[in-house]
Length: 354
Ligand SMILES: Cc1cc2nc3c(=O)[nH]c(=O)nc-3n(C[C@H](O)[C@H](O)[C@H](O)COP(=O)(O)O)c2cc1C
Image: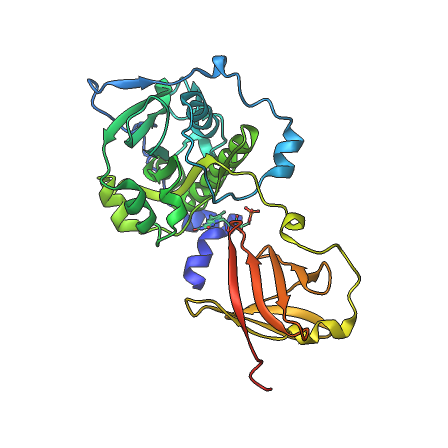
C-alpha cells in the first residue's frame, strides 16, 4: 500500500537531484507526437466547429451548483453538436507549440504534454452509426474504428456489471499515452498524468451540466478486456477512465415520494421502526437506534436517516425511506427511493433480540 501511495508525493530539493533521472528531452531525443497516428486515408467525420456552438451558455455558478454524478439516461440520442461540444470542452486543441514540444488545449496539462487519447463508444448519436470511434483532436474530427457486438451488454459487463454505463448514448474512454509526459518528467510523470486526467473529466462534468446532459466518472472497469476490445498496444497506451453521457430524466423530488406532511417526531416514535427489512432477492437493511437517532445499516455501511415525519425519512446514500405500518401501528413494509430514483419494497422482520 505504502509503495503505491508514494507516487502521490513530490521530492524535496536534496532528493530531487538524486532520484529524478535525466530525461529523454535532456538527452536531446526528439519529442513524441501529441496525437496517436491514424491511417492518413481514413475517412474522418466532421464535427461542429466551436465557433458555431449555439449551446452551452449556462451561467458558471449554475453549472457549479447543479453538478453531480448522474447515472440514469433516457433513450434520446445526442446531437452531433452536443458531442462536438463535449469533445471540444475536454480535449479541444487551441494551439500547437512552435517547437513541437507541447499542445495547448481547453484543459491544462503538465508541460502541455496532454498524454491522452479520447475514444467513444457511440450507441445513439443522430447521424452516426453505432460503434467505436476516436477523437482526432488536432483536426477536431472523429474517426470510426469498428462496430461493437451487443454494445449495451458488452460495455456494462466490462465495467464490473455497472449496467447503466452500457445504456448511455455515448461513453467516453480516455487512454493514457504516458511517454508524452515521461519524455520530459520521467518518474514525476505518473502523478502529473493522474492530475491531468482529473482535469479532463471535470471539464466533461461541467460541459455536460452546461447543456443539460449527465455524466459520471467510472474508475471500475476490466482493464485488460477493454484494452483488448479497443485493440491497444498496452506497452504505450491503455484505458485510464471512462464516463457515460446522456440526457437525464427529470428527477423525483423526495417530497413527491413522501405521502405525509413534514411533522415533528417524538423520540419514542423511532424505536418501533427498529428491525430488519428484507427484499425479495434476500438483500437486507437493518434499522437500529443510536443515541435516539435512527440509523440504517447496509452491510458494514451505516448512515443516520433524517426524519421528515414519524414514518418518512431522508437519507444520503439512499434518497428516502417510507415505512408502512399496520393497523396496530407496527411496521409492515419499507419503501425505498434509491439514488437512481427507483422504488424498492422490503418486508419487515422482527429485530433479532425480540
Ligand atoms: C476517479 C473516480 C472514479 C469513480 N468511479 C465510479 C464508478 O466506478 N461507479 C460509479 O457509480 N461512480 C463512480 N464515481 C463517482 C463517485 O461515486 C461520485 O463522484 C461521488 O459519489 C460523489 O458524488 P457526486 O459526483 O454526485 O458529487 C467515480 C468518481 C471518480 C472521481
